[in-house]
Length: 225
Image (cartoon, rainbow, N blue to C red):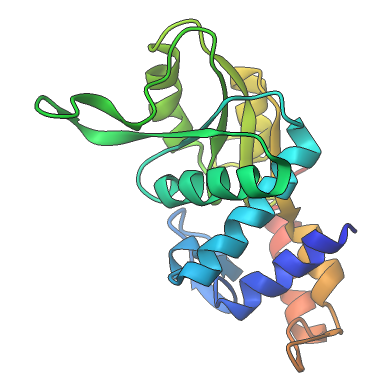
């Protein structure tokens, strides 16, 4: 596992973004883990988060893109922080763009916030985590409506590696199949378990035998088949 991936997993735990216990998801599933990107709340945390995203984007997509599109609302700070980090780490100026939930008819008008996408732009969509793909269903037509725009791919922070509510495929795999662009994550839950199982992180063992058993049981029922 690349060092930045291990560092990112420990970073999620340190920021209380990745939690373990008993959680009821929006889908109704009972999960032994939960991720909340809204827990990144400080400048230092957002700076580091942008750096991890930038490294994953560079590894998976290279520099072959112009714009980072972050779907409202959580995608807005992600696109801004990662654009800054990409410039600092790789010397490439990346524009950020997000959508508004409501159309604005005065001042800075339109549905877009930040850079206004146009013909010829190459876009990477950036999100925290994707379970249902609903935000992509909403933003994909917005992006494509701006002109001859090429979507190079989607990057999320965590691949939960569980099947969708309607098929035996995972959410990321479904998005790739439906829209055709590549989909990647900084880390997967498989990476998380490899990094944290019976190993000390910040002075304590995060995933012990009991929690590992609960995670295995969850994936036996809901994992990608």
